Amino acid sequence: MSSDRRPLVLYFGAVQRPEFYAGLLDSGVALGVLRDSGSVHTLEPEEFDLVERMPFADGADAVARRIREIGRDWRIDSVLNVDETLVPLWAEVCARLGLPAMSRDAAAAVRSKSAMRRRFAEHIGEHASARSTVVTTEEEVLAFAAGTGYPVVLKPGNLWGSYFVSRCANAADLAAAFRELAAILPEFSAGQRIEDTPVEILVEEFLTGTNHSVECLVLDEKVWTTPVVDVVTGTDLGGTDFHHFARVTATRLTPAERDRMRALAADAIRALGIRRGLAHVEFVHGPDGPRLIEVAGRPGANRAPLLREAYGINLIAGYRDVLRGVEPDVEPVRDGAAAVVTPYPERAGKLVAYHGLDHVRALSATAQVDVYKHPGDLVQPRHEGAASPLRIELRADTPEQLLADLDRLTALSEELFVVEAVDTEAGG
Image: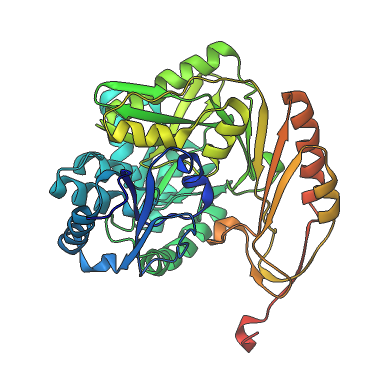
């Protein structure tokens, strides 16, 4: 048994960035990770008290056995999952160990967009989300669009983060996008080790409006919702994809619109049968109010720092609380403004240089710039499956100050990347 008497918060499989554990560093708990040695996420934080590794491909029995072994030396407080692909395995392992987590049934629902949409329709109503269907042939996808009208949205049914999501304005665009996605998706899914859901392609009606998200903490019948975060997408900037360029708070929605959105978020959680944990709910807000896009069974990327900086909400501490049966405290204690911006290049190629990054750093609201890709590295647009080359945090005392600098940053981002085409056929 460890001589450290602190309870252990164990991360399941991966902890991708400090945002997913910073809120627990001064909370009097020990932090650990049982890292999936087969994962692309290799972060092993120096601040952690325990780091162990094993291939999660060995299956639920092996993972459960390793956690039991850890439990002999540590008093496990909770097991947190922040990785989209691990939601079903996390639910399965925790069920076998008798540890609080999302149920197997709910985990399956949040990992399949088609199953999710069916539950929204059954429990909330056909109006709750966009009309959509799974398609397997070009004829099926064109028939759906002919019935709903253009534009339509084409997307994978088992991915996240706007990977390979595209808006198609006509039949020619849609047919080409379907052929490309059908060719790419199986290999990409295999590379991400996505084995819990079938490789599906969805086509859905395009919802006109603005994008938003809400984080939900769940303990049995109770659902706590955080303030709304606004999302600026690639389509808002005049593009054709839905990559998240910026996540912004405070929201531009009215108090009544925020309340309606947060109530719909709680309805979505109940429709999916989520009774324990944290979920990330995304919306489009249009002329008739909010419509659901999807729900993820883990924290939304960048939401923890946004909620902390703008409102003083400790989202990850709330996640730990509900897993150990404690009601979370997600009431705002201040009223600030923050944004996280992740620009992407418009085309794939070799990054030659950044243009104007010094001007980005000079903005009064710029608090942090993380550079992940450097000259000589290959970069891609988000919809081609790429990670962000840059991450920029903005903070301000008022929404007006923040939005003014966000507008300046948006203008700078149009020429931020100097990219050189790569001749892939020649091996370049």
